[in-house]
Length: 184
Image: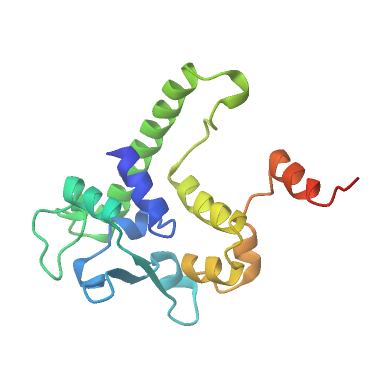
């Protein structure tokens, strides 16, 4: 489940777990086949509503079918984690517990993978749910997707915030790109 929720988060514009657990079927547009929601964090801080939309691809739908709510009523939650929550404190506790459990599981998965990997190919063991959000932004940036789209899809109101999500180019990338300028 942890791997699947991480992938769903990654494919859903790096949706954070506070938004993932609050995602509702009423946020889904059947015609466009995409979810649109207001990021929980920006509800408190933004001066204007920033809507975030992401398409629902088949791989994501399979995750919902595996781990989502059986009842897909229009106002129902997509995932069951908050089904029995009554208060905001319950929601905060559920989010913290789920995030902690997923982070622990992700680290265990990476350690297991790394046991069979050569040293120079080992994966980053500091993985967390937040890695999905940063990876989403970094990979799109490295594919030359406009930063304006990346910021928009993450719900950022300023370019400087988006810039902090995008990791520097790797040594391999720098070698490949700079080699383009070499001539004999």
